[in-house]
Amino acid sequence: MKERAYAVDARIAARTCRIGALLACALLIAVAGRAHAALYKWTDAQGVVHYSDQLPVDAVNRASSQLNRQGMTVHKTDQARVVQHVAKTEGEEQKLREAERERIIAARRDRALIESYTNEAEIELAKTRAVATIEGQVQSARALVAQISKHRQELEDKKPSYAPRPVPGSLIREIETIDAELGRQNEYIDQKQKEAENVAARYEADKERFRELRTGVGGSIVTNDGGRSAASQPVGIELTSAR
Image 1: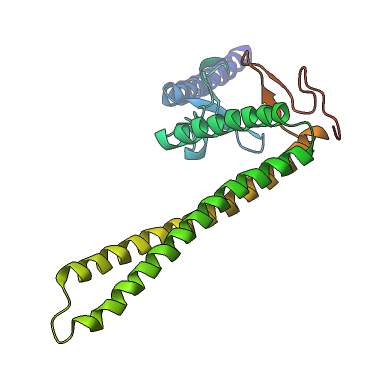
Image 2: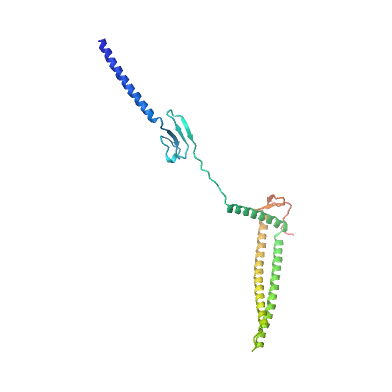
């Protein structure tokens, strides 16, 4: 009986060994198949962590980790940074320089304005004088136009006296010269009239700006040393309502 029991135990042991060997072989095959496979850990845009044996296309530029069979990190890839190059074109730089130049000019104009006048009445007086000067030039030009127009008419009145002979060429040329001068003088008068309008508008703008500076509305003033002071607080200048 004992010999029979020993035989049964031997068969069971042998069978167990064969099963174990088969399991070991299967494990070795599985390990060999995955020996070169990579496991990736990555996080999507919503913050969800994923594990996969292949890195998806939408995860290529994201932070990811490559793990070994024991789950240890063997390689880590940082998220690709999007570098934005802010390139200023030559035209944009030119605009910035022009803007800064205009700002400095405006600040200097403000300082000259509050240093030149103590009240709005003085600005109005300066406007009246400037416009009057231009109007005087216009009146002189109109007087000249009237004078040479009168002479031209006299020449026109002489033409019938030469009949039946031809009108002398010198008389015709003189009339042509007068016509050219009349054209120049009339153009000059038009320009001066526009100039008077522009001067008046500029003084009105100065008056408005002076009012803003006196009440402290916006702006800065460039000082002689290159610094800036608030337009509402000019250094060494006292503004009064009247003199």
